[in-house]
Length: 236
Figure 1 (cartoon, rainbow, N blue to C red):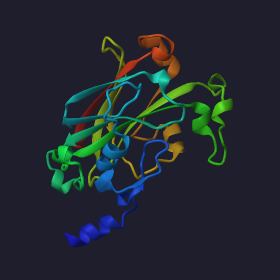
Figure 2: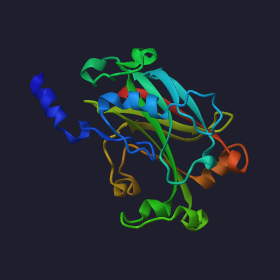
Figure 3: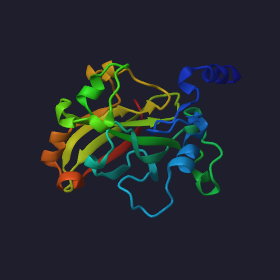
Figure 4: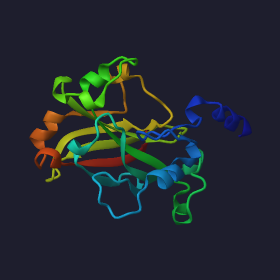
């Protein structure tokens, strides 16, 4: 047991990493991701902003609906919509507990915090080289080959893969797009964008803005959809 623990600690995927939320440069341990999200990103005030982090407890197969007013997203800003604290059937051999939680959240110690992430970007930004810089104030999104939305899930390190189903629904809860068995990504991992462009990744769901505008409800900046997340658990 000690040998396995030592091996895992030296594994890059289990080492502390930068918080996945945009503009947060905090280096976070896998055992402290939930504490960090609560202390740094959970706003206790009444929900008055377009995007305020939500904290929920979920079980396998349980559906979670999250409203997304997608045109109000900041471009190229990785936004966390919610932390879904998943109750695994066998948490002790799957993951490390979440430590140093506030007293009112101690019950989530042996849950896996799964962050629901979304980003509004463009195809040009996705394809740009690493050394290319984009100046936000001078950008014309209409000239960047189309606006695209990326959806994905991240969590602390787990010893086995965890999967979820993702769907985007309109106000009548009719499916715009549905993707099953998306793998939940280790928040310390950074996938090469070439894998996403080539359609080889098991993590992301992508939607064009034109597709959302055509099928969703609302107008302009108030256009909204529902994101449905269902944690399925370990792959069989």
